[in-house]
Length: 88
Image (cartoon, rainbow, N blue to C red; front, side, top):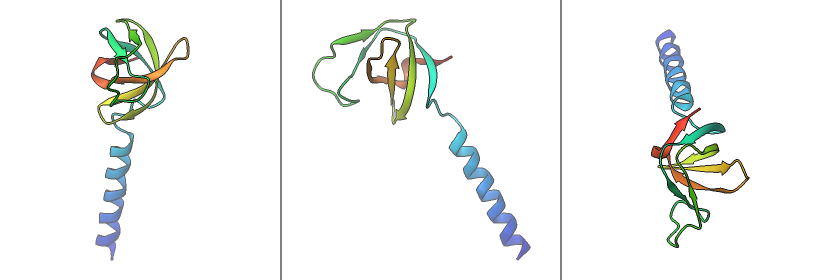
């Protein structure tokens, strides 16, 4: 019985660590290179109307796969690849 409890405790600790690692949700980030802001979503096929510039600061709302939903300082929202973000 103690063995089963020990295994469950280890599993819970591992899962808790995975849930908290690598998350960029709800933080500030800097744009590392010029990138289009995809307002319609990560799979937007029409050309973006806005380009974020290297050095721009954004608020990361959430991460969806390889894209982050961001909000600019002037309150525009859209998606950029996570590879162009540096945590601040």
